[in-house]
Image (tube, rainbow, N blue to C red; front, top):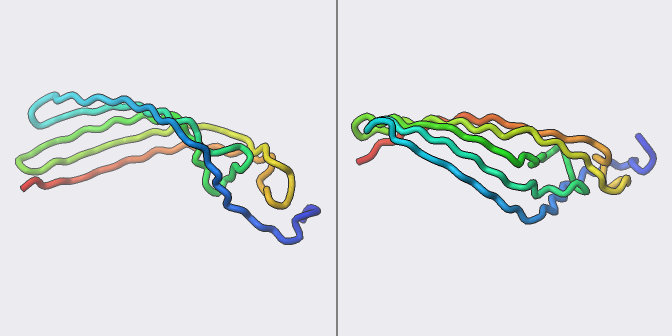
Length: 121
């Protein structure tokens, strides 16, 4: 172990900043039974580089979404896809035993698929 790391403590100090999120979306009814949707979301990362950790890399700032709904009688079938674009940051906090991730580069990207069935009565 490197000096100062005789006892390795992995702090989980979030210490996040406030975040501003801007989102826009649209839905278009192609037929009485079929609706399509698309959207975009930007939110500046709330994670400070001083406490950046690969354990919880909440770094993504740009998200794009698409989805659709198919309606049959009282049933709705919803499908959605979200892509969170890659963002990479480097931990630039103090190099000491309270910051075991100093100098590490962390990237995060995400793809999410959703499916939902609803019954209206």
